[in-house]
Amino acid sequence: MPSPAKALSNAALKAALLTATARALRLEAELANAKAQASDDQAMIAYQQLQIAKLRHQLYGQRSERSVRLIEQLALRFEELESAATADEIAAEQAAARTTGVAAFTRKCPSRQPFPEHLPRERLVEPAPTACLCCGSAGLRKLGEDVTEMLEVIPRSWKVIQHVREKFSCRACEKVSQAPAPFHVTPRGWAGPNLPVPTCWP
Image (spheres, rainbow, N blue to C red):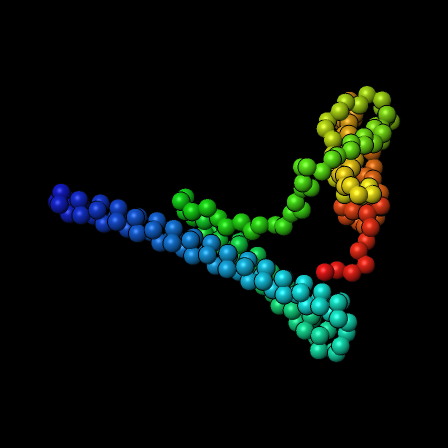
């Protein structure tokens, strides 16, 4: 039968081991988060360098084959860094899953900023479907709406036109019906058909 002092020392050693293991896992998760952040920053820098090289090539024209090769090399480097950043993000998530005190690093996806609130807005509601597009039933109920904003210019003034497409669900078959999206001059663009295209960029 072990002595009480020996049992106490074994319990203290187990507690110290658990504390050290938790600390090591926390440090590992923090290191993985820092590595994922650094990889994300490197991928963003490579992306910006690629965009600058493409814009310079468009602006100044093709002076030599070297610029085309440089753009191709930057594109390959960006793809490599992007895949490395994704792998590091997955590793950071796995390391954070093993501990409770560290949140996993999540990459920020670029998103389009909303138009300024001071611009006047004109709300155009697209004609809603009168019958279900799937089964033809007239029993539709409104679920919500999608608002697509487009920047339009009126001589000496600006306004944002909101195309509203109301969503309806069929009471018979539960399918969702909605008017088609408005025509865009450029696919997924925000410029209206009357917005002038600048002839030169600053």
